[in-house]
Image (cartoon, rainbow, N blue to C red; front, side, top):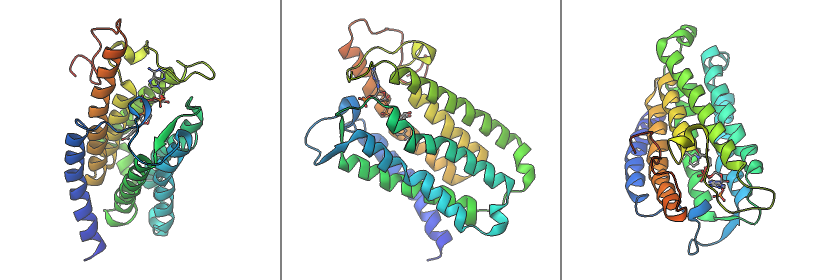
Length: 255
Ligand code: NDP
């Protein structure tokens, strides 16, 4: 089997897996954070878990960029793709884990392991397509409406994700590990604007790369985060009597 055929098989399997994960997550909430519980085997500190889970995404993408031909490596379009990916993932893997107030918090090793497999597969699918298997992007792609609209979505999603995580990370004082009702920004409308921002970001990525690999990542992100947002929302409503009634889970006014 050629690598192109393997890549194609994997990318379509990725969609099938995302559909399966979407359904399963309505019955089994991933056991970390507020949904953490016993019975999932050995646990590791949350901060370490986040680094292990997310590091394969930027490091894998960088490695694939280094393996690309000199011509592709010099492409301004591919450099723009790489920069966007790294802006997101260097923060997520190496800065975010140190910003969370996770003293004493643990996550199951199996959750981190599954995320490592996902991030390796996802970096492979996107990186190999962009840097080797897919058609080369001409420099004019940088002012193609699909690139411009996708980059605007990516930036907007990134800003929403960052701001929403910032609100959450400032709810706890030093040493605190409990939960409070988040307010302000898009929390006026939904319980999980950080997840909404993440979905907008990777939908923008699919558009700006105009690739099936990018689309598979956007679909995966939604398949993973929509059920989790619904679980978070239900948890907030059950935990806080005064939880704002008009707030939805993830999509303002809709869900
Ligand atoms: P959460 O919103 O569950 O938690 C984010 C951080 O804020 C955690 O440290 C959490 O603590 C804390 N926190 C959350 N709610 C409250 C509250 N009400 N009061 C006080 N502290 C709170 O997000 P995740 O941990 O699931 O995800 C973190 C980031 O990673 C998000 O930006 C998300 O979009 C991204 N992500 C992306 C995925 C993808 O598929 N692309 C998959 C998963 C995450 P604690 O851990 O103790 O609950």
